[in-house]
Image (tube, rainbow, N blue to C red; front, side, top):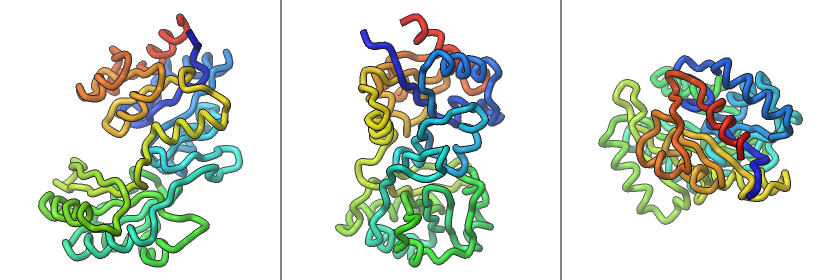
Length: 276
């Protein structure tokens, strides 16, 4: 049986506790594992500018999987090694639909969130993806950028407009993208998210594994939420946090006792992997 050589960690709800800190036992376990030669990285929905600080704090030097797999980012060179961009036609159709339904559109490049000034003021929590928020950006112009193209997009607003937007975009032949609609849990807002078709943490992690010369059966992953489903199903050794929804637990090989409230999930997973 192959021993894991690469461990990918989700951030929010997994490595980060509810208070957005790393438990001391997790920090110590990661350091010890890397000292033994295990490559430990992040696989997160956050953008590179947000994930980078945590990677540096923990001494992670290998590429990171960010934006739910759309970007593989080098923390040393501070630049994307691979990235999947949304097509300008997709962005144009989504901007038209969002604005027509009174939704606030935001574009996500690998390192920043772009939005209208009024929308950033209305939904300041978009900074949760990254502290780099560019208010007043020209979204149509940003869609055409080659140097830092948008890799994902969201439209935010009420539940019914979000439902209508998802239906309209799903029926629009120009929109070759994956659509996700979910409540954000803040002010009753709902989000319609567009990502490059077929993009997932599993895809990003597979690209990283190939770069590192690591086989699929040598990859482990820890996560807690629906955007971790594909990654937990793909990795040979996969762990769901204790507070994860049942669907996420079923996708993983193991369910941990630790939760985002207690911390310690990474230490628990690493203790298991050390005994393989």
